[in-house]
Structure formats: structure tokens, C-alpha cells
Length: 372
Picture 1: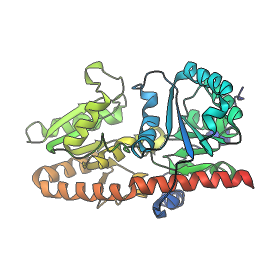
Picture 2 (picture 1 turned 180 degrees about the vertical axis):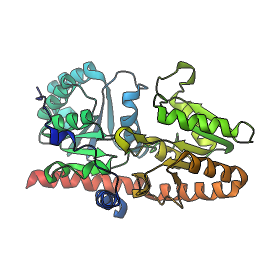
Picture 3 (picture 1 turned 30 degrees about the horizontal axis):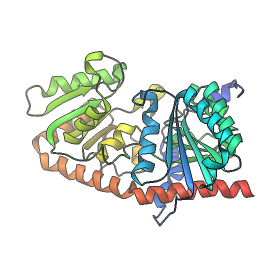
């Protein structure tokens, strides 16, 4: 059983660094490997990925992150098994125990991929699977962000048994120890399903999707609605989380709305003045939207990988936000120009061959560590 750790005061502060110019420069270091990596030919014929979904419901929100990552593997004809829920994982363990040679003889390496919401009981089954297949098997956990104390607590509890963490929170890396950072790689795993996210007959629509249980977000939505009722710009608000039943949208409808909307609003500010890199931002860029994002003036996580004047637009106040929307409403060509730049840069950075080359590099690095 994985031990439960108690954070001291210093550890509790680790997950929330300040958004300053100095920290922006530091965070840039933790995405530099991803940004500078060049694509090359990579062979995955000897690798099996096992996607371990914590819920039996494929469409459950907890499975969304892993579905994005798995889509990259599936679209490129790499071997992948998808296992849903603890009972199916237990069944897989029993089958492999009986037919070990049959399951593993074709693969040099097996990578177990799961998410940070895996329970202790689920993780016990993951470790059992690794021990059965060792030394061929390694464990990867996907981290959306580490800004909350509870996220960091979970990270620590899984650190010893994990071989790698793929994360989307470079600012959280600033206060981690070198030992903790050694297993962490910036690997943004959102918007990777090109079958789902792509530009499609853009309409004069500004789209927001997300939970609106925070007053900060409601204030922006109210400002948007009150300013543009008389304009040609249509505003669509959908809750991707279960905040209000009449606003909930399916993943398919969510992607369709992004693909057809000219403008997407993303509000990534969290508690304690912390900003996260949301999957919604990356999905909007993949869908060819003009992306409007709230960011600190020193720069937020999206500015670490995209140009916030050329590829998207950022704002710090409601007045700046309304000014941008007014400008786009009056001069649609400016909106289209930014959308095209953001889409092209997304396609360059998230080119599947490039991502797979980078993935192979990370995994091979992990294998080399084992041999040393």
C-alpha cells in the first residue's frame, strides 16, 4: 500500500509560486526541452502502451486527460490497450499471470499510463502489473496541474513508484527539488485528437466553456453578455463540468462548438492568483479560434510556448477584455489573422511526428537511467 504523506508548512507552499518576471524566466527553462526538440523518425513497434482509466465510464470527466493522450497513440497506429476501472485492471492482472509470455513476447517495453486521480487501491493494481512484467514495464502519470496543496500531496504519494510524470504546469516546477523535477517532463497532452479538434466553417461566435462557480468567472461572463447583446457577435456559454444541468455539453458538442466559433474565451486564473495552462486553450488553438486568455502582466503558462501578441491575446482587466472583443467585432480580419497565426504555431509545435519523437526521447531517457 502506498504511504500517505503529511506536508509540513514549507511543503504546502511549494505548489504555488508567485507570477513574477523572474519566475517567468525560470518557468521558461522547464518548457525549453519541449520547445527546442526537433522531430525525427521514431520506431514504436516494440512498445506497448496500456492506458489505465480510473473510471469505467469512457466519457467520465476523470478520463478526459488520458483520452487526449491516448488519441495521439491511436492515431499513429501504435499498440495500445485501454483498461477501464479497477475491476478490469484486476482481470488484466489475472490474465497476464496465466499468459505472461503471450502478452509480452512481442514488446521490448510496456508503458502503463494513468492519471493522478488513481486511488490507492487502483495504484496497488498498477504496481502489481508492473511487478508482473518487470523489468519491461514503467509507470507514467499525467498531471494537469500542481497548483493546489492536494495535487502536490498526491504527487508526493506517487513519486516513489512512478517512473515519469508528464505535466502541464511549468510554474509549479520552480519550487520542486531537483530530485522531484528529475522525473517530470513538460508534455502538453490536450487537443491532440485531430479527428475531433479542427477549424470548421467559422461563425461570428465567442465561446466560453467551463465551470462558472467562481465569482471571478461570473463577473467576466456578465460583463460580456451585458456589452454585446446589441452586437452581431453571438455569445455561447457552456459548462463542461456539472455546474448547471442545462449548460452541460457532451465532449462531441464541445469540440463542434470550438471548431465553428471564431473567438474562444479562456479564464485560467485560479485561487491565490495562480494561472494554469488549460486544455481548453490548446483545444481552441487546435480548432483555429482567436483565443482570449486572462494572464498576469509578467506572463502566464500559455505565453511560455506561444506569442501572446501574435498567436493569441491576453488581458488583465475586464476593460481590456471588452476592448479586445470590441476590436474584433469591428475589425474581423484582425481576429482571423491572430487565429491563423495561433493555429499554425499549434500545428508546428504539436505535429504528431514531433510529439512522438519527443515522447520516444523521454521514454528512452528513462530506460537509460534504469541501466545506469
